[in-house]
Structures are given as structure tokens and as C-alpha cells.
Length: 565
Image (cartoon, rainbow, N blue to C red; front, side, top):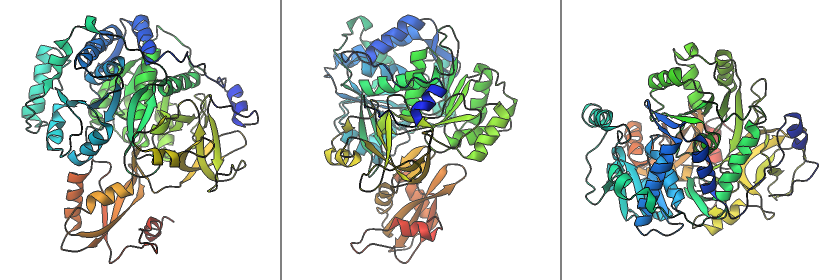
């Protein structure tokens, strides 16, 4: 825990909003296992997750996750070995994720929309020995040139957890009517249904874990460069769960009998959803309403109408899509307690519409994959949208620094830097990158430029790095440039983010050609190389790219060409 100086301005805000300034961490010899086991005992018969009108209780989640843990242990995996999970929000996800952690292994979240190229990088870098994958994306794995250290692939079907009749229908519709499953051949793979029942839960051996052990490898663009695995420990995740709870209990009574539902439309492989809709939701005994495809707004709104969520965590893109839907305003919001914005800035116009329709403001927070993720938040009792990221989470110290790492006074622009129990251990395999990400005094540099006011509330005003933020996901120009430069007609390419009403920012590329190629051809090529949110949406052909005297592309000059500087 950091020693937070007594003159920090937000300490008065804790008192004013009834937020505990510190969290009480458990003994070092505990882990997430104690949290899970407490939940299973306390909430046994309550629904833990609901998906397409099928639900599993906390008691079932306990049993199923132990069965997965037992199977993984039977493979001879050792404590800390990596298990990758590549799937959308299905009932299998929490079962597998908990099973991996309960087996003493490290969970590696993988975006199921990754291309084979992107998947190759993550498998190689993580060293994952087992991969759970939904069959919709099995062809992606089959086509991956580098499969890393993967020894066992377990293929899930969409209907696996829906009973025999309903599951059969779901799988048939997905395969034969909606044509969602490209042909694939993974002859040595196992089916999820087989694995779930292959080894009895009674064979499970509870591992010896502590708060220092790594629980999650969360991939991120980080504050610089290509995708890196942020090593998040049991202690990091427990701390952030308790920090979120300190915020929430300042506004809502702790009622173990409450039947609150939390909308889980954001993908659980994203750290914001993983923590808020996964870890924290389970800690409180909520039911997670899983939305496998949030782009199906009609289907999501029907589910919201039926289950009336009390908590709606979302990013600006989703809030905007909901308020723009013709049926959204007709929903019953009497159960709604809070709408929580994260992942990207919420636009004031969207926040205003949301408040008008639901009667509640959007409460914004801020975080990074490297911080498990929550760093700062607005109090839950605010009367209206603030446009700020709020005050530091409990037991968290934040400073703003200049380029020489000198701490700046209130009111001055500086890079936001964080110290707290939720901050990652390191980037896997990248000691140099880890060192660059921390100040000499041990604060994590976020790459975001902010201003702190006299009450300790922070507003982000700029971004120090070249990172592009698309619908809450970090996208790094050099990854786009590397992928697009593989086209034979591209001589040079530079990428920046340009404003988008829908997604916050869109990637745009500036291309110097060495052959005949059209904008449409490059956009199509991008679809094969990069997952949806990373692929370029705009192309501009130029005779040359602005460069420094050592040949580095000057993205600042590209932004000037767009009128963004």
C-alpha cells in the first residue's frame, strides 16, 4: 500500500462522499480462491450468470469450475502455467476462467475477433499451453502460423451449456442457417462437453496460492508499443475488487438477498468487464446478464426488458447505440441503480441523452489494463455527468509529472501517474518496457495528460503517446503500420486516430504507394490483417510521409494535416 501524503486534495472528497480512504487487504497467504469459495457458500442457489434465458447458479458455477480445474490439473500443468481463453460472453467463459484460476494456473484473455496473425503473437508471447476456443473462431487458430507452446485445444460450441434440445437447435442454427462457423480441422482437439465431464470435481487439489501469484495475463497496447501481457496478481485483482466495493457501498446498501442483475454486454476478455462484471459482480452475489453479441441491439434490449439490470457498465460506443435505439426509451428503469462509464471518454452529448431517458447520470471512471483496471472514479452519488474521471480509488496515490518526472502543482497539465495495490507486477517478457513504464519513484506512467483541481478531481486533456482509443480499446499506430506495410503495393504507411462520433476515434492511414492499389483494396486487406477495432477505416494517399532527421514518421505532422494539432 502506498503512503499517501496527508495533503492530497481528494482525501476531503472521500469524507464528503462517505468513501473509505483505504481498503483492508487480506493476509498475504490468501488468494482469489478464498473469494470464490466465500461466494459459492454465501450465494449458492442464486443465479450467477444468465445467457439467452439459460442460467447457472453459484452452486453450479462452483461444481463446473472445479471440474474444469480437475481436468487441467490432470494434464500435468504446473502452478503458473498459462491457459488462453478465446470466446465471447457465453456461460462457458466464467466456468473456464474460474476453473483456470482455481487450478493454480494463469488465465490469458484473448479477443475472439483476433486475426490469425494477432493470435499468433499472443500465443507465442504468453506461452499458453492450453487454449479454450469457441468453434466460430477455430479456423483462426488453425490458420495461425505460430501456435506457440499450445499442447491442448478445447473447442466449445455455442449451445454447450443450454441442455440437449436447446443446445442442439442453437448449434444447428449457428452452423447451417447463420453460417457462423467456418470449416476447420483440429483433429487433436477435445470438446468442451467432454472436458467438463472427463475428470470428477472430487479429484480437484486446491493449490497453495498467495496474493503475489499471477492470476491473469491481460494483453494491452500498454502505454507504448505492441501488445504486451500485463501480469496481474491475485493481490492486484483482490485489491481492485475491494476498491470498487468501497466506491459502491458508499451509495448502495449491502443486501445479500438483493436480486440485482448487472448487464454484461462489454466482453469479459476486456479487463474493465472482467473486473466489474466478473470479479466484483460475483463478490456481491449479482447475476451477470451475458450478452454474446452486443451489436444485436434488438436482442440486447429484449434481454434488458426481461431482466431489468440494476447496473449498466458500458463504454461511450454502447451508451450511444442504446440511446439511439428506438425501443430503449420504452424500457423500465425502476431497477437501475447506476450506469458506469469506462474504457474511453463518454461524450457529454451522449451523457445528456442518457440522463434524460433513464433519469440517472453516467458515472465515469478511469483505468488501464496495467491497473486491474480501476484507477479513479466519480462518486456514485453525483447528481449529473462531470466530464471528469473523478478522484483516485481508495489506497491509491496519483501524481501529475512533467517530462523530467517532476511532480507538478494543482491546476497544471501533466502525465497522470499511479501507485497502488492494483498496479501490475510487470509486463511479461519485457523488463525494458516495464522499466520505462514506471517512474524512478515507482509510479506507473499512464501516458495520459490530465489536470487535477483543488478538490482532487482529474480531467484528461490530452494523450502523451500516439495510442488511438477505439471504443475503449487501445490501438497502437505501429501495429497498424506493420500490418498494412505487408501489402505489396504499400511502400510506406503512417497511422493516426481521427475523431469518430460512434467510436471515439477511428484509425486512418497515410500511404505512399509503390504500385497500383485503391482505398477499397487496402481497407479489405486491413480486414484480413487486423481485428475489427484496429483496422483502418480511412485511407489517404500521399507522395511522402513527414519524418524526423533520423527517419521516424512524425505522426504529430499527420495530425496537423487533419487539423488535429
